Length: 167
Image (cartoon, rainbow, N blue to C red; front, side, top):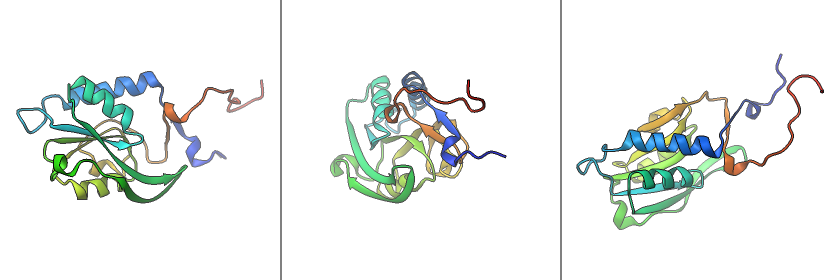
């Protein structure tokens, strides 16, 4: 009976919510690194992982932060994942002691690509969909596969018509 598009089953995340959930992710990761509980570095998967990685690195007092740029979406359509920019190779090694952070694992294709590059890294996301869960080591909130997550960096405040009715 619903004539909504799949991406209209939305989960809207505010800046406050992403901050709280990213802090919760940091708390879950605290003391879990391989070096007496410490992590050597945080690597954000750009672009979505940058805000959560910054919050996690602040909370865990990790000063070495880098990025890996992976493109896997064209707007709201998933494409083949490819690395556009890799982090410092000497720092990364096989990934031991490295915490790789992203906002969301969807199908797991992005994390699968990065995991092949750094098999010993620890992969953490704020949100996880069932299809991608096997690719992530730690996450905070699970959402259904058919839910589209609207992150605050992708949104603007504007009027929205009521779901039913016109007034």
